[in-house]
Amino acid sequence: MFKSLAEAKQFAADKMKKNMLFGTNRFVCDVYCFEPGQTQAPHTHDGQDKVYYVVGGRGLFQVGNEEKELGAGEMALAASGQNHGVSNRSQQQLVVLVFITPNPSH
Image (cartoon, rainbow, N blue to C red; front, side):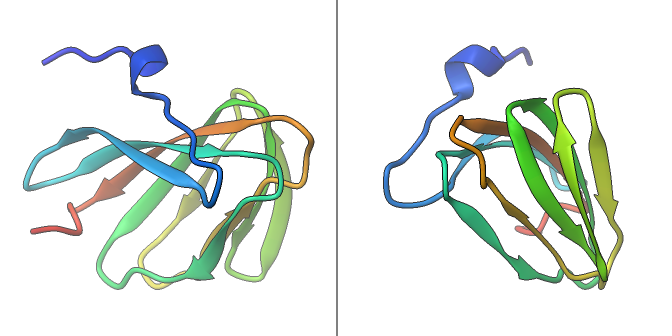
């Protein structure tokens, strides 16, 4: 299966938009699209690991007790049970590839 990231990117005015690229019973790959000021509230996943990879823009990423601003080409890992979230405090759109394993739906 093949996908175009450019075609999958969609933004919403009211909140961060999750756009699924791939999903199997073992993992999911989404592209998260943030307008300026949008956030993903800190939360946890028990039994699941999440990788964030910044495609474009800059965002403030929280993992556990740490916060770091990341830009294109940078990434973060939130292991199972770690609190994590994202904020777009910039004036530009933020695009992040997200990989979660195992798939939350299974």
